[in-house]
Image (cartoon, rainbow, N blue to C red; front, side):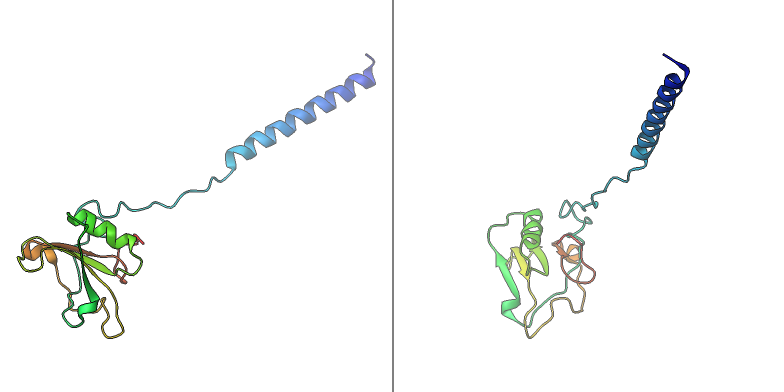
Length: 139
């Protein structure tokens, strides 16, 4: 191998090393997309979706619907999240008249996200807002 061939080989070899070095460094800097953190909705009172507030509705019977296939507050909350029209939910534990799960909906006559505010746990019940401005971001 003569001197010119050796220099050419050396230049090619150093160029390859430099290219690999830049590629490896660039790989370290690659920004990995991050998945947005999804809240653990309806896990327990205080978690997103189960924020212990509702807007009580007494005006329009079509606005509040009893949900028969929810046997716990956790189920009631999850079913409200699954229903894109459900605004809030409450689960009556204490009341003998309306015991069980109820979902609230907006109608043309009444906004289910309007005051007054009610805290269900103050009467031994459970509930939460899913799709009002102060909602859970679970939808």
